[in-house]
Image 1 (spheres, helix red, strand yellow):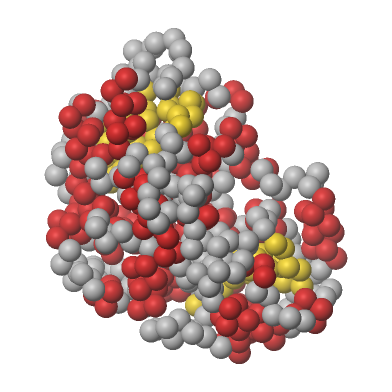
Image 2: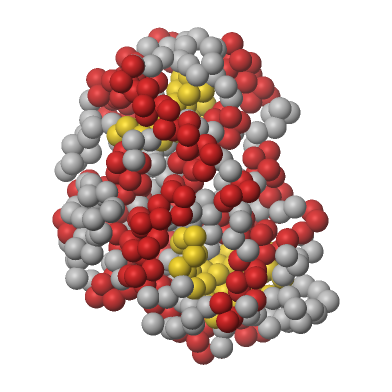
Length: 481
């Protein structure tokens, strides 16, 4: 395999390998970091599987394409993983453990690349899942950066590396309470509900649980980056540095770049043109946008209950329904209740498949965002000052994000049963109306609009010069932990 591109050597420039987890919500932030590094003249090798790399070239600025090399590593076949699947978006949650085992199988190929690259690799920026990489990098004399796409509050919840690796918290119930190391300045409601952590359990490889992966990666990296900023959560950042006892830097919220904003949002797209005309006909700040990410799989009953709640709200809406595999064997677009679209015709729009989310959120008719609470979606919503209706679901830290936003008064969580996640259509409708139009929701709307000054400030969020930090070792207290 030809791993390198011939580039003129410059002793003042670095060669940095980027190795994200196989999920869309990880690939894009890692590509943004790659772009920042390339803008400073550094060489970047972005490493992933063929299908995940296929859509990236159009996201790389042409002026930087000579500095960013996409390196393909074929994903090994693993029993239980559907043929052709290379990302979490292609899988129901109970199949994700097999993807993690396949990801672990990339170790030989990545090791070979690190050994045989035409240029000496100075750093590898990697993700939570590559628990084996610290051992490989140490043997090759390569330094590691752990880039966590979580915010600092979520990272702090997992605790110090020793705690994560020990498996002291071994049952889902252990994660439904605030941890013992929580500081008095942090919100005391940030913990999982049982249905959330149980769902996360379903996507873990129990041979190497996620928390153990996370702890080993933190312990084996010289620098930790978190996708946040001190203007939003200074106290959590302070706690995280205490827990890790190594350099922790907020890289910023990484709001979407101009290029990524344009992809999928273009006026040339016929569907987007039709939707934009519909949005234009609505009053300002009147439409609620509903999107539950690419990886949330609701049951048939829950999807119907959600639909009935949207209908009962009486407000204009755009609802994105993705065609993703369901545990029940159905596609997302096939489980909208019979007759629903006819009843809401003219008032609401169902958008099937990948939507131009940034274009929708930016439209002046949109005021609220009913979201699954993925951190990237939250950043995009608050970047436009949209009030948040919180409907956490799926795996990862989504429940923690919902509690954090609710505690800060910039989002309202739809009430759900702690054990099974059930909810009523009435609670959906009431939550939507409270956030969108009721008088008691005005303080929340004001706070959400104010968040635009933080989340939508590209200059503020891109102020960390990572390339200078990586190039100046005297600024880091290197420790393998």
